[in-house]
Length: 434
Image 1 (cartoon, rainbow, N blue to C red):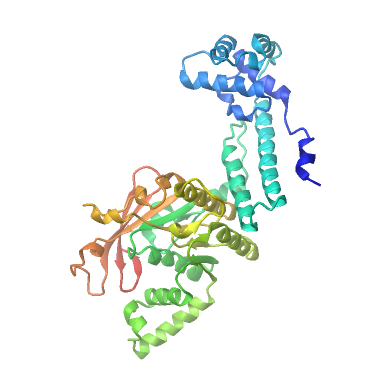
Image 2: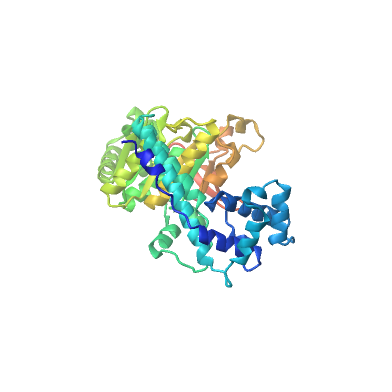
């Protein structure tokens, strides 16, 4: 049996009387034109056109009256008047309008529209699976994208009654403290309601910054951390051990360590080994859906107690569905990871390369617009961290005796960036407070 054939015979959720009530209330001035949240929320085509006319008049001139006369004239000018039933139907809306406007009717319209959108999106995914149009990963990616689109479309909610779930409210305020006090003091830590992006040139310290967060969350706070990256487990151990023991990374790789250092490294190794760190090796061009499914599986295993999810290199991620451009693909990837962090209430930290021409500028500090692949990353991410140390470009021996250099992190959250002064030691791969 074709499920689509059965669904076509079912009248989708709608409430014509609620639509007539709201439109009529606006036309006689009992309700503000602002109650028309979106013309697409209306089921009947005539009501869509009337609602669209109200929105167009409202948005074109805030001083212009929105009433039966102006809406009738607007529809006539657009050659849409006969399509909606003519002046007689518009007049009937005003005649049948309730004496007192009910905001609840607006919510009914919105909820019915949400249900229709959910049905439409779900049916599209079901049919894609039914007809075997794609592989399982592609079907899951389509469902994830459709879910995000429906949630974005209905994110507005103009209820008169202030009504928010307490647990959701508390989770939306939470941030995860990190190893750097200056970041905790400035913004509270990593947000759990949107993606954090660490951007910078190669060797600018992006991975070291992310692993510093991992050390605090997984080793100090004992919360599970999922790490998705192309570096090996050995490299993660080496990086964490050299930072925690403050033993030069190059010396450690070459085996140039004494007995005391070896003992310290062994102790740190045992600490790292017991920490709830879960490593997921990524290949070149990794599907974002694979990351999402793995993270959700870990969350289920840990009963929702996830400390953070770290994903290396945005530019290596792909979306299983075909997109019009790489920019659109990047946007979908970041949106899907935003949805993941909010659904799991856990920070998602994503590293990103920046354009090489940053090195050719006089001011070599990266900006959000320098991120490769997306020109709109600042509006998609909840938080952007841009580490920078000038010695990377100068290499003139201005480092301190232990190799530390003056560094900074520019934080882009809302408005102007906040610039924090720090110390970075490329020998120990370690970021520290001043």
